[in-house]
Image 1 (tube, rainbow, N blue to C red):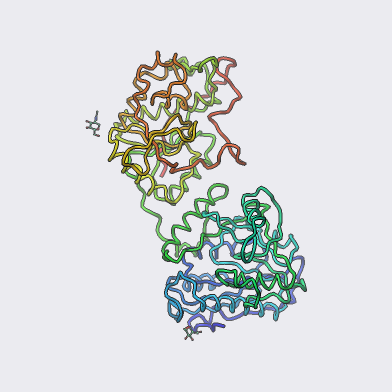
Image 2: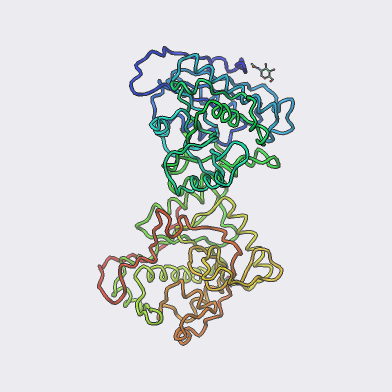
Length: 573
Ligand SMILES: *[C@@H]1O[C@H](CO)[C@@H](O)[C@H](O)[C@H]1NC(C)=O
Ligand SMILES: *[C@@H]1O[C@H](CO)[C@@H](O)[C@H](O)[C@H]1NC(C)=O
């Protein structure tokens, strides 16, 4: 076991309070936190401990940290000094003077036998300590696990299982449970995606959980659990015999089932760094977690004192474009807030353009502006949402001309960028500039009507000439592209923008449109082979709402209220 470093002696002195305080319905829980090179995550994960919905006087902390080469020790020190007072007990072994590598380590990222053994020993030490103190439960929590729900501990307790973990997801499809300890049978193989995807929901017996594990010491079956490797025929099948595998083997040996629960979106765990990566790659992992969190949750945030340890926000850029527009309805400010928060994290400067709200469109509005929505083929109607959408894009194209912008990006506010969006955009734009400098329109996301309907662009890696594609979720546009789109006065025959773009690129659905759009086919459209940005929710997914295809009202049938919101632009910083 590590001993306390002298410089931390004062703050980390174990303050064991009487365990006999009123127990109420809150079992005492020891939180075990092992920290090594986690400066990226610690401000957030320590903040979530501070904010945990559980009485601090029922929580004991057992923290160990050594062999750091970043500010982990300093962050722990600062947090403990300020926030640890109310806890039932605090035992922290933070060694700020241990060398950055263990004797058998070649890098801080690769797992060495010495490291695996040390981690198992520390967890075992914590477990022993909890048993000695008569603590009810132990919560082994990795320092990089992001939990969405402050009441997660109570929820895990309510499952009433000896060893339980909330299912955590990661950007890489990695999770904190395994369908087997050693080799996986085909049947077990199938269990993982079913639980991971949420096709089945609830709590499931699994042979191995890790990263966020609550163990109930009051359950006599947990008495023989250990993190120290025992002999077992399974060991030979296991790639890395780490503490979680050792625990799973001891659990199996004592006939105890571990439980993983996916009843709600509990939280995230980063993809473990591969041996070829470096510690600094954790920043990209953290960014991915922040963006993932924003899909359904408020932004990850820290308690005031931890702000000291956050890096400065990234410098904002327009990624080589003159303007990045985000179209959104005034009545959906939360979408703009979400996308704005993503952009703040990535370092993108965008302007919000209030969309024309289909719900508020009136015949008068259209008449005054000489706008003539036009249905397609036999369907003579275009719905209000579609008209609102089409007009919103139209007004942006006009804005591009008005301000003489040479190239812009246009995003609907349900776009969701991933951490590598800027890099992938740069690759794509470099290619199109090099190979097709006369380009007009570049899909950043599209839904192909027919999956294989595209032509490769010679000499390119990422660029294609797309076939019929739906959606105007995300695209780049040049000034000559905007001119082309406006050439035949689209207000006179306003089509759904989802059909108008293909028409202008030469995908003619109805020949009658050719008569009114002589420029059809002149828009030079390209696309990434793969989408470089995604919608925040796909059609059919829980929480999906489309304002463009609301099918409630059709033009020409009913009259509407008078409240009309015209497009106007806000620059929010
Ligand atoms: C810190 O770690 C170093 C190297 O592992 C060790 O020699 C030293 O005794 C440790 N200090 C404390 C206070 O435990
Ligand atoms: C628009 O910008 C281009 C450079 O991108 C410039 O050559 C042109 O003169 C500008 N046109 C007007 C009307 O300002």
